[in-house]
View (cartoon, rainbow, N blue to C red):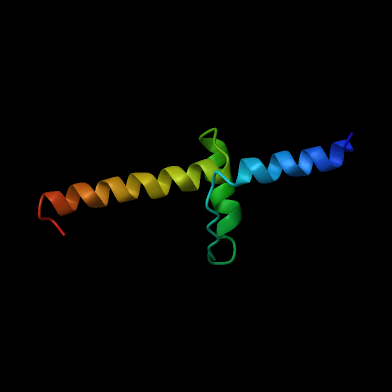
Length: 69
């Protein structure tokens, strides 16, 4: 029987395998502004950043398909 800590670690690794990790640098002070914005919209930083990237990519694709880029 494995101790709980080992079980928890394995579960975490298995869960994290479903994702790519992307790290980025932002200007000093940006992290708090991003966190505050996300919280004001009921999101985590991760959820907000994923949404912002997805929506921007969708918008850029729409521009490209209309010959705007």
